[in-house]
Every structure is written in C-alpha cells, then in structure tokens.
Image (cartoon, rainbow, N blue to C red; front, side):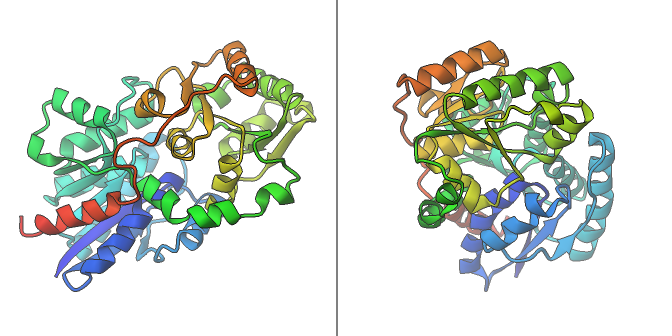
Amino acid sequence: MKKILSVVGARPNFIKIAPLAKALKKYRKEVRHLLCHTGQHFDERMSEIFFDQLQMPKPDFNLGVGGGSHASQTARIMLELEKVIDEQKPDLVVVPGDVNSTLAAALVASKMGIPVAHVEAGLRSYDKTMPEEINRIVTDVVSDYLFVTEHSGMHNLRDEGMDDDKIFFVGNTMIDTLDANYEAIEACPITKEMGLTPEKYIVATFHRPSNVDDAENLKALMDTLGRLADERKLVFPVHPRTRKNIEAFGLKGRIPKGLILTEPLGYIEFLSLMRYAELVITDSGGIQEETTYMNVQCITVRKNTERPVTIDVGTNHLVGTSMEKVERTAMDILGGTTKPGRIPELWDGKAARRIAEILMEHKED
C-alpha cells in the first residue's frame, strides 16, 4: 500500500485539499492518505472550522507552529515536519497553494528524496516582493508533479524549463470545493440574518501587507470603504492581521459608521455572502477565482495577479492600489458597467478526481 501525506497550514490549503482527500478514498485499498496540519493558521476561525464545514478528516498530525516571521515559521515547520516524514516514510508528499507551509513541506520532502506533488502549480505574479511568489517558484522547481489550474500556469512552467511530463492541466480543486458545497452556499441564511438585500451590498476583504501594514494606506482604504458604504451596505470580515493593525494605528475609533465589520466567517457563510453580493473588493488570490466561478464582479486591489484567467475570462477587475481608482471602478460597477465573465476551462468540479487518477497511474514510479 502506498502512503500519501498532504500538508496544509492555512485557510486556502484546506479548501484545495478537501476534494483530493475525498477523491483518494476511491483508492483506499491501494493508498493510505495522511493529513498533516502545520498550524500556520492557529486561529480557530481561520482553520479548525474549515475541517468541520468541509467534512475533512481530522489531521493525523498537527505541528502547532503558530505565527512568526517568514524565516522562523518556515524553519519551525521544516524541523517538525522532518520528524513526521522520517517516522511515516510517505511515498509522496502533496502540497497545495503558495503559503510558507507549502514551501517548507516541499523542501523537506525533496531533500529527503520523497516525490512532491504541487497542487496549483505554475501561477506567477512576477512580483518577487510577494513572499507567495518565492514560495511558488521554489516549490515548482523541486516538485515532481505540477498540477495546473489555468493555461497561464502551463506557459509559465514551460518558459521556466520544466519537463512536459511533469505538467498536468487538471483544473482547480478550490472550485471543486465550491461546486460540491454550492447548494449549502445558496441555502445559507447569512444575508437574511444580516439584513442584506441580495445583489445590493458589497463585500470587502484585505490582509496583504501592502494594503494593511502601512498606517496611511490602511487609513485611505478604510476611508474609501466608508464612502462606498454610503452607496451600498458594505460587509467587511476583518482578517486578524488587519484587525491588529487597525488597533495598532489608532484607527479603531475612526471606522466609518456605514461599515459592517465582522469576525472571519466560516467557509459556507463567507461564500454565501460573496455569492449574493453585487461587488467584492479584495486583495486575495482565491477570492478572484471564486467570484469568477460565481459570476460576481470583483475588484482586486493589487498591482498584479498570478491568476490572469480571472481577468481574461472571468469577472475580475485588476485596478492597482490607488484608492481613487478603486472607488471609481466600484462606482462604475454599481452603476451597471460590469464584465460578463464565464467559467474557465476545466473548472468543473472534477480537478481532484483527475489528480487522483494521475497519481494512481504513476503509483509505481
């Protein structure tokens, strides 16, 4: 029996691995699938609730590393994960996404001579000031299976000299999870409970350092959201990092009264909130994909995106970090200037099934 170890550490990882864990159950007579949670996200609202809502098996291992700088966090994950891999001796390590846990697990496994499969390979922002970009590049270099979500990923990997026989265009496991939970998302009562009229409110999420770690930038962001809240109700689930900085910069008493601030929400609740929104404003990567699939207008407050299909095919508007442009684009969308959008190729809820089939075809390698 082959042993596969999947390593997760942050909210998006759980969404991407949940459908693969389910797909591998079909092969449980041939494969034992183990799950390791690094503890990179240690806030229960940011992680543990996902295991319950996504019906994921509880982790077989929890490293409990917590927060810290990029270097210290990555190092602690590597040290603790090495013990697990040395004890369990998996035949394959699966790493999703682009967080520190992804990089740490890929490095440890490859140095120990264990094949690595990267779920969501090949995405590039071409901005090395983003820690995630470094994580993506290095993870792809040491991986043996490169599972790609969109055509840009295939082009990027080939341009970087990756062997074609390592690259597999399979679709998007994050969309698998969304598709599998769509009925629950549509039936969720959160909009009614919050007194929101479908397609007459805005959702905003921000957590990237470029937007929330500078006092002036965060103040400008809050002011912009406040003005938009004069036009529509605006719900702002606040990431722990953002909340910490709001308090540290003395902005807590200056929150515009029209903003509806909430704690981070569960997966079903948050996706339902986005599903019925008129507009989502964010700096997240995954939200660009989820809004494209649900045909919801999205403004991405970044200078670049590693997910160009959401712009070329989907409903994403990449506007940069100028708050004036964010506000102008938002007002245009609220006024009816929207992108039609369509669902990208292979975003059909079957990506994890394709990955499992490929892994089983190569299980003797």
